[in-house]
Figure (cartoon, rainbow, N blue to C red):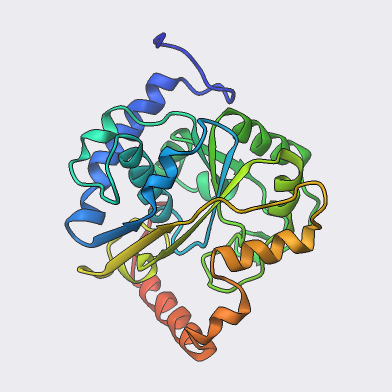
Length: 271
């Protein structure tokens, strides 16, 4: 690989590789030592094409979820089955791997800016900004950049656009699926909210069982299924449809949210 070869977003691939290596080594213990990450379905990843793949997942922290996926994806592509044991796989990471994130989050400090270089496709959220509800138009450049990333490789997105469970699926994800026609792979994660703070940088509790289940690609009729149909399919696939609330009561979710807010007030994050 030429030393200064760049991806479609202008990022130098050698620099991106070094960032992934460093943060991969630093973060590995969070899923193997302090907590135990259980994985299912990693063999599905090895059967996917190198590009035009969209991963949809529920969301529990800002950064720990994505970091775990980087580990699992690269470990699987290196031949490991449902394990991230032996971090040597991070030496040759998949470089056309991206994740969709809010622009304000990725610009909130030096660490997020470094993370962004590792593969962020930053967008302006149309429904929330600086902690307040807003309503604004979708930027065509955001949609174009997500499509560019899908065309180049694998893209991770969190279609609820929030770490709060059972929030509605954003219709923009369904529009992107109909437009770009990617292979759509659902992922369901759990345990990250209990083991990390909201930003996913500080360990909140140790010895938590974290899980990541990678499911078979969705069967989608891109031309004939409606946006509403695809949204419903996503809700069920990532286990965020209201019918799953029987597993976790509304009261439990409210208590969990209050607990997170109280804990996060005690912490100091980067400026």
